[in-house]
Length: 282
Image (cartoon, rainbow, N blue to C red; front, top):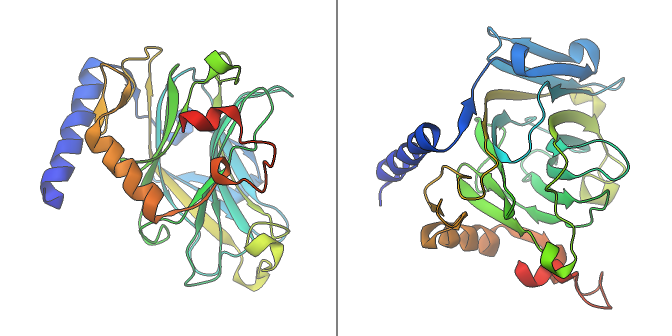
């Protein structure tokens, strides 16, 4: 299939989903989000269609959604900090509040100019995380906007990049593993300095002569649904079973084979007494 045909197929699935399966919000950043910290380092402009976060030596910045979500599909397009972004982290995630919070994370770990970003993913349930998977991307995320998606339903969580599923975290409550299914979550994003760990374990520090560091956001969409069978919109999904079809599974295998660089479910040194029980579902 050519690139044009593939794009057309994904567009058709998106239209069908919007018409048949969910309530889609594609509003203004002024309406859907609020600046949560960083003052003027966070800006909404272009009539509410664009948002930027900046980091300087004094402070980073962040925003959060005005609504909470319990299941659905969350899309956001990001263009990450360009050039030497070592030491910086751009986080985009869902989270509830409190010590027993749930959380679904994308974190983009900056690097030296010319080196790839690391995309760090994690899932917290009842305040406990430690479920990391990390990836390189198959494109430069600083040159153009790309779509980062969280699909969350009672059966599983799917992380996707430009409609390519990269990770699936299945509901394993049947074997005693908590799953984030009861706490509504808001959308958060922040740009901050983490040069004590973000780049090569903290060996490469932030170069403040390159500040301010800036990331950009556009085209937020939220498709809210509580139905396990009506959960996604990209080609490669089967809404009847709330699962990836053969096409989607091939895409997932391709990403994990060629671009995954860490998987906690394969880290026997970290778990010498045995891998976490949910890993059998991975």
